[in-house]
Image (tube, rainbow, N blue to C red; front, side, top):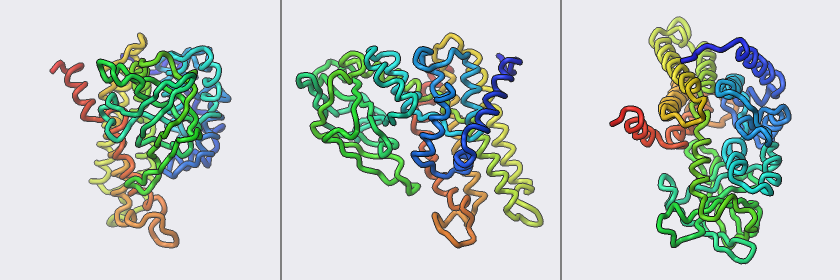
Length: 390
C-alpha cells in the first residue's frame, strides 16, 4: 500500500493548495468553512473559476475537459479543495449528468450539452426519487409516452435538491410499462425545467431550510432528441451515475475543517478555570475523533492506491459508511460546544453567537449523510457480502 506522496505528487498538491487559497474568493471559502449558506451566485462563481483553469471536471474524458490524472492526483485534487473550504464543482453537473452524457450520449448531445454543463452555464438537477420510489428506485411511475418527435411526460419527483436554482433536469422516466422487468422499461431524458407543465414546489426541511423540492410534470412535451442513449436503457445509465455519486462522499477534508473550527470555538468557551479545549474529557473526545479520522484517511489512501485498474472497490462502502458517521460526529461536537447558545436560531442582538445558532441546523441537516449515496444500512450489507463473505 502506498501512503506517502512522490515528489511529483507533492509538487502537484502544493500547486493546487496555492491555487485554491488565492484564486477562489476568500469570502466564499469563509462561508463554507463556517457552515454558512451559499448563494447560487457563490456556487456559480467558484465553479466557473475552477472550470476556467481546467479543474471542474477532471474525471470527464480528456476531449471534453477532463484530465489524464492518476487516481492519487484525483484524490489530491478533491482533498485539497475540501481542506481549503472551496465549494466543490456542482455535483449534478460534474459527477452525475456530465459523465452520463459523455459515455452514453450521441455526438450531438455531447456537443450541445457538455461545454455548458462543465462551465455551469446550465445548472442541472436530478429527477430520480419519487414518493413511492426512493430506495426502490426502479418502481418509479413517471411516464414518457412517445408522440411523434416528442415524449409527453407526466408524473412527480421528490427530494430534488436545489431544483429552485436549476435550468434543466435529467430525469428517469418509464417508457415501457409492459417491460418484463421494471428496470427494463426506464429511459433517461433531459429537459428544461421552464418547459410548460413543470411545477417546482419547495419542501421545508427539519433544519428550517429549503434545499429540496417536489417537481410535478403535467403533459410536458420533451423533444425526442433529448433522450440519452437508447430508449429503455435508462437503468443502466442510472447505475453508472450513482456509482459516480459516491466519489468523494467520504469527506475527510471537510471533516478535518469542521474539527478545526470546533477547536477554535472550544478555545472561546469557558470551562472551570480554563477553556473547554483544555478540559481533559473534552480533549480526549477530540483526540478520539481525530484518530478515527486518521484511520479513515489511511483506508481511503489504500483504496486509492489499489484503484488503478478503474474497477470499483468494495472498500468504498467502508469509506461511505465511516465517512458519513464522522461527518455527523463533527456536527454533534459543534452542537455540544455551543450548548444552550444553540437554542436560538437566526436571532440578532443577543448574546448567543452566530456560529452557535448555526450549530443546531447544521447538526440536523447532516442527518442526511447516512442516507444519500446509498444508506449506511445498505453499505453494511455490501460490506458483509463482498468483503467479509458472510
